[in-house]
Image 1 (cartoon, rainbow, N blue to C red):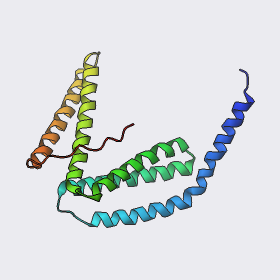
Image 2: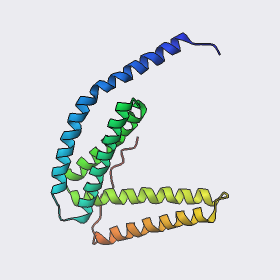
Image 3: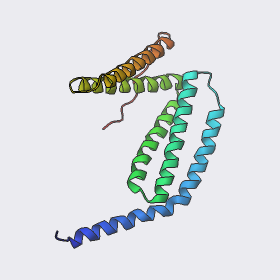
Image 4: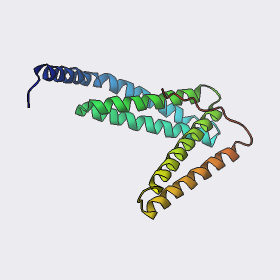
Length: 174
C-alpha cells in the first residue's frame, strides 16, 4: 500500500492538537468541584413536588456521571469520547437550567412526558422491525412489556396532572 506523507502529517498534527486537551485537566477539576457544590445545594432544596425533585435529582446524577466519564476519558486520551460525552453533559445541563428557570413543576413533567413519548416511539419501532423478521418470541414479549410499562407511566403522569396541560418540550434537534 502506498504511503501518503501529507495524510500522515495531518494525522500527527491532529493527534498533537488533541494531546493539548490534557492541559485542561486542572481547569476541568475546578469546574467539576464547583458544579458538585452547586448540585449539592440544589439537592438540599426540596420543591414539594415529587416529579420535580426526582427529575432534578436524576438529571444531576446523570451530569455528574457524565462529567466523571469525561474526566476519565480525558486522562486516558480518549478524545472522541470526551467530545461526545461533553455534548451530552451540556445538553443535560441546559435542560436542567431550563426546568429550574421558571414554571419548574410543569417543565419537569413536560421533560418526563417527552422522555416517555420518545421511549414509546423507539420501542414501537423496534417491535415493528423485529416482528417482521425471525425474532424470538421472548424478544417480542420483552418489547411488548416495555411498551406496556411506558404506556402505564404516561397514563399515570397524565392522571397526576389533574387536568393541567403541559407545553411541549422544546425540540432542539437540528
